[in-house]
Image (tube, rainbow, N blue to C red; front, side, top):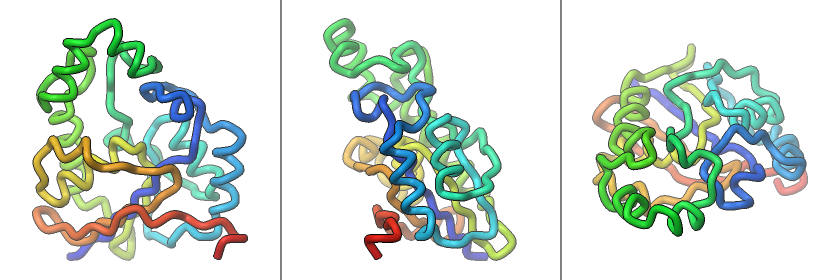
Length: 194
């Protein structure tokens, strides 16, 4: 059976504005306003999910979704770097940042490696978490969206670093385990932009 998985990246928050590694910061006012304005353009699905971060949960709520929290859609666990700015970590731990960026199996921060993230998200994707009509929509962090695309298209894990995911964009995967098609980055539109 063909499954349609639509991933919506969460709205803006302070961590994203400040170029910090994801932390538990919820949406800021602008992010919440943008998500509420885009609520009417969310496509229908048979099942609604959300990553467990406050940013994902508050985005789902602002979009008007009743979404079940899905642990497999958790943001990338960056261990002790969580909430810090990349430039600060780079100044303090240049070798660790270099290893993290260059080796998909490295986890110098004590959290999850890029390979582990991609494996976790890919396992969730391949389990075909479909709704009643073969579709699922999930609000998931940018790292989860990028990992899903890398897995879905069987790209080298390092391709993760070449994918950009903007707030409130749709990424659609259709197919089944081992055979996915991807449609990237369609923005949700506010009622006034249609």
